[in-house]
Length: 270
Image: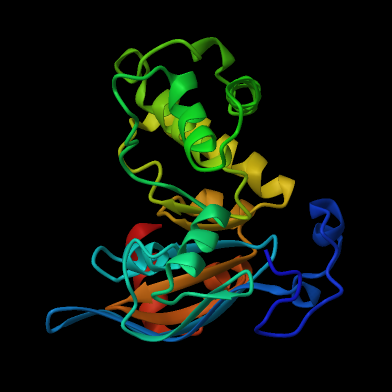
């Protein structure tokens, strides 16, 4: 990846995540820049004129009512959805139709979905090993060692040789997180990762996400888990009708929201 962020010209950022975390948020460089981003599905504008910057090592929680554009927005960060107007820059690389730029961005961005999307005919271990071997051309022994370490990190090393059908929903989602981490991304996107889980399984997935946040991973999380947001988020972004209505730290969002629409939504869900 380019060492200089092409958006703000920063060249003096430390590479070590621990060193980055020691810097105040406002002193870190922008790892994601979105300027006046729009997305239409036919005549329907799903994301309208969204501008925001995400700092390296920041945890951003995105929330809002169903259909507000939040999932579409994060899917544009790795081009699972194409933005049709505006500008998106990820770690100094602008999102364009150039396949080389797209491939470079996707190598740096991992994503975890509502549904686990594991290959049912592969064990947990092989699900995690697949992409590093195919995309990064990692030797099998190295990929296996990395996968085992990641299963340890997400707390289920004993499940390495089980197939998805033999795992609980929470275990499958943790395998999915490990699979995304296997590509050694700079950014992790989470699209309502606990919404398909039984209540008793939600905590184990959120615990993994808490550990990732503490490690310095840049994270964009679409979630309604407000306890997690209050505890872990650096900032929160409230979306409604495709627009970014309010962006601020959890203390502002929960205690003193600036927009009536934010307050109304929080009153409904808290």
